[in-house]
Length: 277
Image 1 (tube, rainbow, N blue to C red):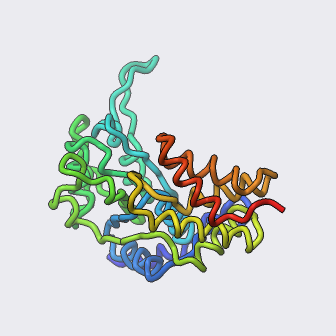
Image 2 (cartoon, one colour; image 1 turned 90 degrees about the vertical axis):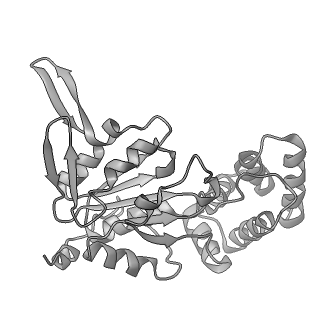
């Protein structure tokens, strides 16, 4: 069945009438669009704060599909996604979970950081992520066929993966994979300028700081400076906070709790960020 007509739906605009802002890096917009047309699920891999969620929001609006987002966590179970029976004044009633609602209404379902969910939870995605496009609801006996326009999108941060937190090959191989990284300097500067509302010179310093922090190897950091942290620092500065203080609060102290590591990172900030005039 040809679902290319779904691309003709009017995009869901943001409050100001525009699509959610996203600066394309390579072929990810075209790949996602073709995956949608071909009814293929998408797996997005990339570090924290590199734009994975914003990309999905942008694409949902671009394709004119409603978006259901689930932030996965250690206690997320299958019932949280599929649904459960609840007690109501009239008796016991079935309530769809977010995955079921998305499949029933033809929405895009985005499972953010899917590897954080319990292992047995991801198994329920299998029949939705292959040619069957069916969600078996064991507690009601329903075999829910996904409505036209439904798309399954999951993401995770490969840097957090270990033997206990990884996708099974049987799950991974059902998805088209998109690899995300931090943007090139020019693109990242444009993002920070627009999202933080700071002048080009300030955005340039923040991007240079990110580059310096990302090159550090001697510091024991689980994560490095993300584009999201740069935007947060920029917003603090745009509101009247000194740039060095904004970087300390939004970047340095967000990356580490260790005093010695924070002092080392703060030295990098001092070397890159110009002091206030």
